[in-house]
Image 1 (cartoon, rainbow, N blue to C red):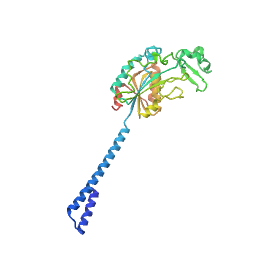
Image 2: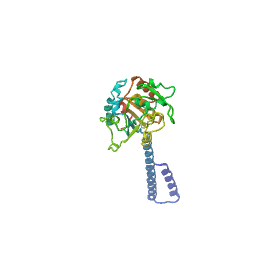
Image 3: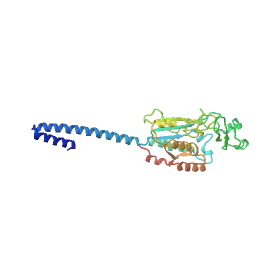
Image 4: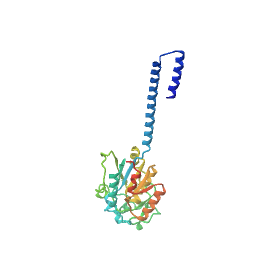
Length: 301
């Protein structure tokens, strides 16, 4: 019997001793009070359950897969990884990424595209356009070669070191397209997955490896805002190239507060030495390196 009901019962018994009443009236009053208490308890329990459910929901991880630069030029084009020191086959990431998309329900999927104008600063064959902007301590113009690092001082921009790459991923060319074998989820899809495409490296004088920021952090893409709007708490980074755009995106993901994973077997890189160095740096900064088979341990289906 509820404490309040017991107290009231004693009160009624005492009242009966001084003022006799029918016992059926007492029983009706006790029953009515008991029903009111039961209803109050039910409302309280429902409120507690709702609060607990909301708390559990707010603690659930919201996951995004960031698919970085799976474009033709990095696979069999002008900057194909198989022609770089690593000799990696960039095409090998495609079945792994497709399997991830088929096997796991990511809340958000983002595809980044290197998307350069023809006069982009990263192209070795555009060096003559900015040779007068090389700093005094840069490698001299005559000694700069493909894959060298030049140092520029461009008016209105911070001093910047720039790797010189073959011309690649020029806007609206075949080499800039996502590989046709890559699974690309439509923005309007039945699985209710939020999809965004990010174009980066679009400004002539500033390169951008990360899908979040340009290399000088002068401009930010819409990726972080999109992820925040969707309530994303953790990101899984895959694609090309491990030691450049994947690494830079992952580092910026951590800076933005996301629990960040690089799925190692879903990435390929330019140089084994830099891959090792940058993955080591990533883990020292509390990043997580996993295999595609381990994703199930971190994502809530």
